[in-house]
Length: 264
Image (tube, helix red, strand yellow):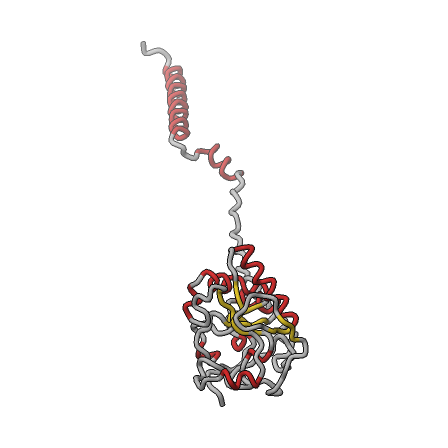
C-alpha cells in the first residue's frame, strides 16, 4: 500500500486540481444565480449602451385671446344736425334752431288718439312695427303722440322737468318719436304700460325696426326724465341693433355724451 512515493505525490496533485476546479465552477454558478457580476457580467456591462434620457420640452406660452375691435362707425351721422336720425336732444342739447320743423313730415297710417305725423323714414318703420305686433303677437298698438312743434310743446309743458320737456328741448320736435300705447287705452302714458303685453312686446322687439326705449327706468340720472315705457325714439336699425347687442340703453352713454339730468 505504500507504493511509489512519486506516484502518490502526482496523484495527490491531480486530486487537488480537480477539487479546485470544481470549487471554481460552483462559485461561478452561484454568482450567476445571484445576479452578480463575474467576468461575463462585467464584459456585458462595459459594452452596454446607456438608455437616452428624454429632454423636457417647455410648455407653449399661453396666448391671450384677441382683443375685440369696435368697428361701429359712431361718426356716420351727426349728433347735432336736427335733420340727422342720430341727433341727440336733451336738457343740455336743445333743438337748433329752436323752431326747427322737419321737411319730410308725413301722416302715419296707424290707430291713434291724436293724429300722428313723423318723418318719412320713421313713419315707415312704425307702420312695419305695428303690423309685426299684430302678426306675431295678435296685439294692436296705437299712437298717443308723435311730432310736436315748438308751439305745441309750449302748451304741453307742465312745469315738471322730469315728466315733460321744455319747449325747444323735446325729442318730439325731431319728428322721430312716438308715444305708443295699446289700442284699448290700457295704461296709456303711464308706467304700468311696461307690464302690459303691448309694452313688453315693444320693449323686446322695437330695436328690430330701428327704435329704442329712450327713457329707461334706471337711467333718470342720465336722461333727466322719469321712466317712460311708451316713449320710443327712431334711430335706424343699424344703431338700434348695435345698442341692443352691446346692452347700452341711452344715447348719452353710447356716444360718450355728458349726462343731462338738469337744464343749465
